[in-house]
Image 1: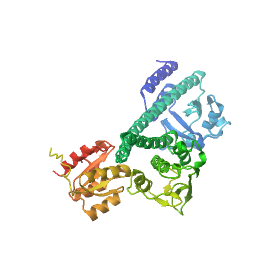
Image 2: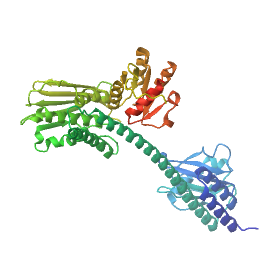
Image 3: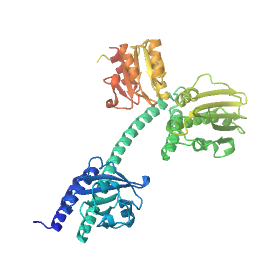
Image 4: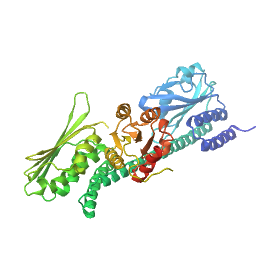
Length: 375
Length: 125
């Protein structure tokens, strides 16, 4: 006949192999309680999982308990409960006679099962302990040092196995997420390429040399790239219009920042909104440098926007670009890409309203669109 | 394949364009108009597309799949009921096409003028 020690060693070896192959925490815990029960010759064994945020310990797994106990029974994690006491004790707690126990109270479920002696050992975790491995004997029993040592070894093995399953799960989840992100990025790149192509075919070739076409196109691409860059730099994938305006308009402000004054609040723009906001500012500035306030000395531009909440509706961003002290302007005879972008594309894309006015005092552009601050 | 290289092979055809990226929508419109088509839209939402199918009776359609949070599947369904051919222009691959969009001729973005001409020609053959 095998000695208790041999039985316990065999249980450890069996469980070690099982734990190595198992990828499910419930299977793992169930097998652990089965093997412990056999090896230590006590029918009732259970695992309590600790939920510190709820102040509770759930009887997550166990063998030989009455129906409706495993997976259902919940204990407090205070020091008057056996599990709570063991968590605080930070070492195995042996209670050879529960009737004489005064460190904690015996829960009803143990009384119902006629439990008279118990041992509790901590199952460690990455940080906080996972919970408690508990052996509940229905006969009075003095647990030996060997029994306790066996249970400690077992609980440590279990802790390592639980961590392994958890990190395995975490890795699987991360890999899935990575796959989703890669596909998302693929779509985003394709969409962006579509936009890049549309910019090329919409940039007029009429009356332009190849070099002029190239320069106009590259400038637009750069405005797009600035907006995309700001969105991607932020962890929340939102871009700040204030930052965007400063970057897009920087080439026109480097000699004299006062030529374009910028006054606006920070808010989060989605990538789609940021692209359009950036492209619009780029078109306005390019146009001003060619025909408007930036084409003559002393011409000035004021850019401002504010965000206001409509009653019960989404917040709206209202922006105005106002040129002053520039040359006399007249509406263009043929609507080029810039006009089309400012009047049509931006309004459609932002689900808002846009208007260009050729006022005698200077060109004015008004833009208003909803911004979902919560996004 | 019954492809005609004549730029006028679709002259006068009424084509619905459903695309939520406005720049791309305008690009597709310009290309179709160059082919001589009459463009209905472009529209960016399912509701606007269904309205146009009802009011303007398009002969064919070019559909983007993802429309700002909705898909053009109901539009494809309505076109099938009316027996109107359509092609799908999308950044997604075929396995993302479900329901009435499944099996539709597919063009990948960015839009290619020559391929669009070939696909349209097939739609009307």
